[in-house]
Length: 130
Image (tube, rainbow, N blue to C red; front, side, top):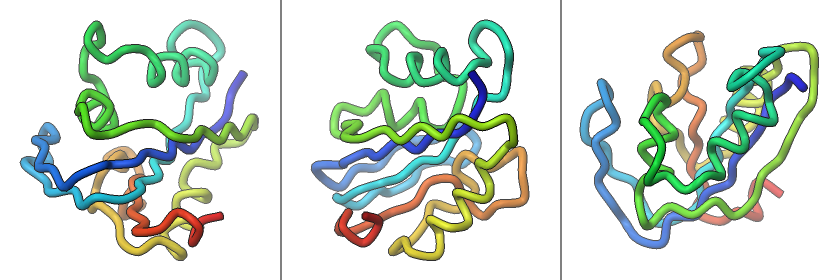
């Protein structure tokens, strides 16, 4: 299966995390929505396997994407997952729509391979997204 997904994360307290080349970033308590995609046909590039990877215990995972740094942090918790099966790459379309309703975004997070400002968005209250 191919498509995009949205991970809804809750951060229970303010933290600072080093995110690869982005450096040390501060994250406020609240909700974060991360938009990703997997457009491959086999192995780790399929949507199912990408999502399984994100949901797997991070202790045994090599950090590959920006989101891995957050998933490795003890204070970030995945609370919801939205799956958007599609043969078209909709990741950036979804990210732009979420950006419009978010409280803020983390510049360049998860978007180093596209022209989006970010693929990680902050919400003080999740109901703004719902």
